[in-house]
Image 1 (tube, rainbow over the protein chains, first blue to last red):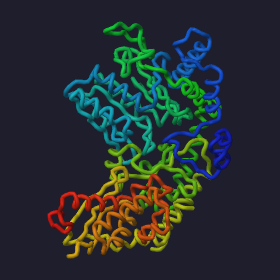
Image 2: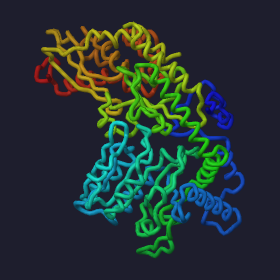
Image 3: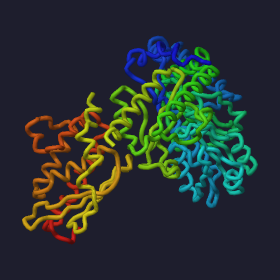
Image 4: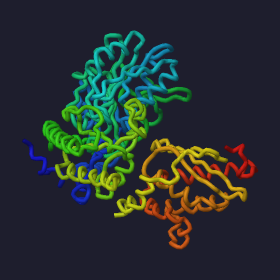
Length: 412
Length: 156
């Protein structure tokens, strides 16, 4: 049995090492960064700072090569056959907007349907509302069982001849469950539709492979996977990216410009108008290296599974905490959402904060999901764990929740 | 620490045993306030005495402990106040929770309202604390703009 009381990782994270008073349980919102990422960011500006792509001098060539290397690293991470199909954006939201705004018009018309699940983050929901509105198409929702399971019947009922796009989260940011991407992709392809995956919550925790998932597009953010804030990724099948118009136009995304028109650069530059956050991309690479090589995804998975199992066990013992989604810890990938009976999640979070326990409370950018779940106040608490957490973080959460219960029910 | 001090016995008494949380039968004015991001919903009602002062104040709704305690505390404070005095107290309370007014003597006017002074260090909770006061202030401002006597039943 893995020793979750020991923590060989915390020392690598300057913020966590400097703040032993904190139990950081909000990694699903953003991860903490190891020193390797902060060092890489600084090293970019100290040793290779120049605008990539533009310059004909050595420094700029080095910066360009550094970005290309991270592009190749990302491609290898997600099993993409060709690094040219990896587009750098600012975040998952921008990546999904790019698909919804630039790809949708190539396939979506009046009466067509886009199918998503009720478990989507607003980032994978509002762009489709907008795309459907623009095209006169209909947004259709797949509803899971209470434990997050999507049945074959539900998929068959919602993915049909009118469906042009199916999009879903790989892992739900509220329920923590993995969605059956492969089954959805097969259903989509059977009716000639395209599959889109929001992998923001899976890339930091699971091995993600676009071929195994059978997806046509995949989006994620660097900052949830130990990188700096401000770098996102969109991968797409080359022939689909190739037929898309750019969402943003301007510098560095053209082949040639004349007074009245312009021709676009090839993929991926076509989608990367303006100066990219080159240092951020370089540091994102360092974050992925730390995640996949220094720690390793197998170790990440094993440790997070042990932490989640311990957390759910202890929450279950309290008797006043209701966990949202599956009761099976193996179906929660780092995320455990819950409510303390009769106590508003914002009060829970404020009281926990007083003892240095950082959780998220609110609608988690998933209002339609919380409405469907029928959660009181359309809000819940969420503790999200990463491999750099340990047993003491969970114990402090449990102690804090006991204090919350005492404050609200101590005088009953 | 500040946060657990806030959730003290006196504060929690307003949450668990509110004196002013009920449906008022013969309200002169009723106004709804919501915090969409929190799911807090509050309906505040007042009845005026013949001299124009607030004779009865009550609220219904649901939300976090801070929004609920704040509404109970405010209701108690407003009894006997003119609309002008009530709006001045709303302004003072909102300045307190935003950390703009810290003078002890000035804040005494808020009576139990000072139980919420630590909200000034909890920016994410300011809108919870303010909900009742903002709702009352909007209701009274509407009455003033309309040029109606506050006791005009047309406002109800």
